[in-house]
Length: 505
Image (cartoon, rainbow, N blue to C red; front, side, top):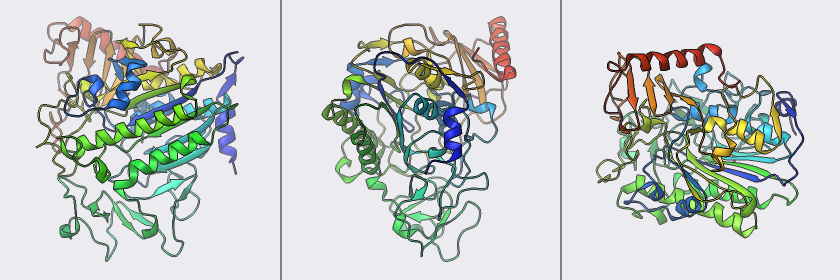
């Protein structure tokens, strides 16, 4: 049964304009996790091959200057769905697995806007935007509000990440396969008596944690947080990619010819713990991290084959991207460092996940729509925060003034029909940065130069930093002392965007 909140989410924030005469395209967003700019063979990787992604790139537009809004997952996902920079709202940092929903029902989201435009909407995979009230969800009853209350007709998700409890799937607000006689209990503070942990019983582990990740043990892997009960509902990590892919395929198969659809497939790959299915073991020389990339490519291939089989590919806009830049060792000893070789996960860019440097937010980004997009490569500055405004334009919707405060209509750039993208973009990673043309300004901040756990450069400097990416793509020459006027100009622009509370006119 649809809730009152779901209805409000569709109706209140938007007004409808006259629909385009042409059939609305189907939209599929495949959102990878922790996939770096250099992790795909179409972006230069050689130690791993991604033929399925490459085929989509060859038939569409491959972007070289596309960004998330944040160098970490939850804020990027928040911005993608709401069209708002996550740093504007408290509580949008990396969430624990028992957090309440951080997108309030009733506001415009990418899903609610497309639902109002007549789309069937579905989300499959990683969620990590909280579930239930602010006090946290009831894992043993109806879990609401959640995706179904902010515009999605169908949802099959994991609450947070693979390395956090609860290690169960949630379908349309209910834990899948939950035995009522074995209720789930979750705690991020206190261990449950008689429940093993990675810290106390490391002999039970098939994958050892490198830092943290030593609480509840599920499937021989210790996680962040403590969990008790729900044994029949626990996932198997090796089957996760196949489970999500099958659910996504099923969603596509159930669509009707007269209703356009929006599928948001948010993969777990290549986030830790990296435990791909055995058929992908040793597919690459890079160990589980490389094999997880190969498994991700398989998932993309299954979606592409399904669209072809159902004769939907021609009028389906497919977008492939990632929630932030790459990280190698992020909590488990999985050979990711020792088998990295000469592979460069962030490509030519400095930093990665958790970093204010370009490697933190500049990610793979591919758009394909055979009926309209001509193959090519684009260096337009685009961001995932622009999906809401751009898809509203695509589907004939008009955003209300209070919707999507930082989302711009860059549809022509996304379709490869214009080289002009955004004028500027704010990036978030501990401190805020501003990209404007070839210039990048990173505001001053206090903190460590490197993440102590992942060895990633944070990009934080007490003096602030200024780079000209046209001749310094690796951000090696800080020009803040040599170009004080340019630094002040960009700092003033960043301050205005922050102070105005919105950047969309």
